[in-house]
Length: 120
Picture 1 (spheres, rainbow, N blue to C red):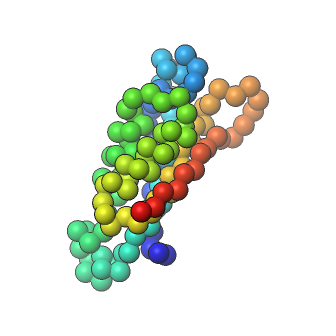
Picture 2: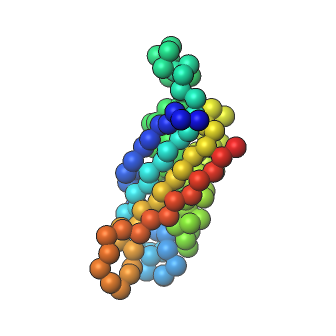
């Protein structure tokens, strides 16, 4: 499938990480999601019901980030991918990237991210 809905930079604060301090003090996470689905009917009809609401996807991402604490962003990414697939049967595959720009790393860095792909 070559059609995609791409949502980038959904921001929320969560308490994810392996350190005790990360469980207490929220930090920013950013999520990108690429949804693969057939958009031909939506493009032809101009009808949202034939697509997937990116508002619904963004709200779901925000809810998961601000939800229960996870040790690994790998776990967070996997849960996000699974939840997005459950959102609509129209979604054939999804790729989710979780960015943790303020990860506690002892050297200078630009970003830490984990990407996970899931499909039906």
